[in-house]
Image 1 (cartoon, helix red, strand yellow):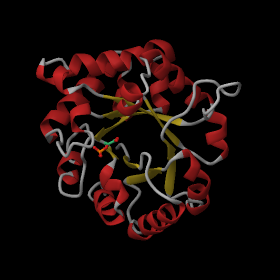
Image 2 (image 1 turned 180 degrees about the horizontal axis):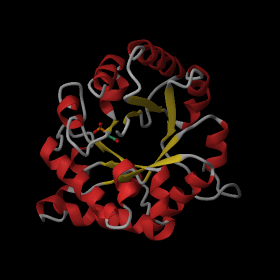
Image 3 (image 1 turned 120 degrees about the vertical axis):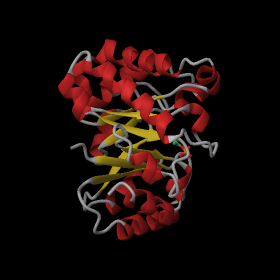
Length: 251
Ligand code: PEP
């Protein structure tokens, strides 16, 4: 049985006051949830120190939104995996579509970041997803499989034992348009079947979470699909009540 994972991606939002309040409210609101569900929050780099102190019970896991592929060096403005590990970070988003699109991250860089995360003991949450045009062309399955293969050819199939996949159709991120449970389930199943061709055991245990306008109203149905193991939640994770309700629907 795969444990559900719900991670709030706070993107470039929040002040110290808001981060403190949000974590306290999530902590209180999710007390009593069973261990069927694991909860994570992903504040900005600047707020990780504060968040790490507030999450010291370990019940809410910390996720970083990004990292650089090198462990140290002259890379002005970047943050390395060992630095994140020092702050108690457990997960790190890799290849989020906003990084791929706005910051032109290539499959090669995404793969290097994925490896760098694992080398420091962090669990990469590898984001995969097609654009609206690609969906309209019927290319969704092909696109996400190619994105996964680009990372697997560098990191190897065994690396998926220590990773999470997030299917995030770009047309559903921050748009209020959610993939239907059937559309999302189909892609999750395709990814799992693709991995099973190389390693059935890893395919069975790997968590594949869904992201794209998840909210309190649609979460339960999405999470009840056979291959959907939780959610990566953007906008709705900035409201404690809404996020807590999403977490509860995974329990
Ligand atoms: C995201 O940014 O990962 C995301 C899923 O955002 P939203 O929930 O706002 O669509």
